[in-house]
Image 1 (cartoon, rainbow, N blue to C red):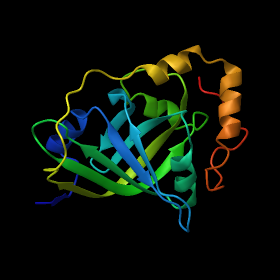
Image 2: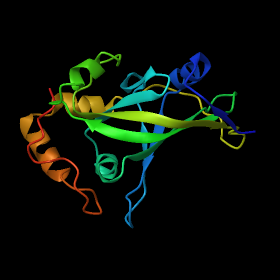
Image 3: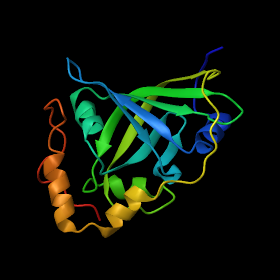
Image 4: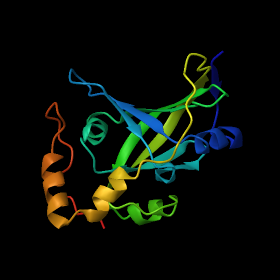
Length: 187
């Protein structure tokens, strides 16, 4: 039932584009907690080429992904169809963090459809393995709409909100380094 793919071809790109959300999984090298995060806003994910993807990392409740990527770079992304056509697609790879003050950041922004306040970084993933699975046991859901709560929160936030967020995001819940205190505020 599972199949491996050599590259992110048009069919896989169409499948990815059709999903309203995806999941990100990372883990520290030794001990600690595995992190699994749902991500929304379709326009925050982009396929850059046949073996590279990226997504916008928005300030939220934690900074585990960034801390784990600094630790070892391992990352898995999962797209799961909740429609009548069951399918799960996993992208296994090595990720890196591109901060808003990095020269590469502005070029990456061109790949994303919308504007979001509260962008902490872009996560770029070099995809090493592409595999799907049936998803036969995944329930059907109907999408009502994207949830605007995070965008609304960030649109109202002031500079002090981000100063506190950067301070709160200096370390993961396991104490791994994440954002450094000199990280620039989102623009």
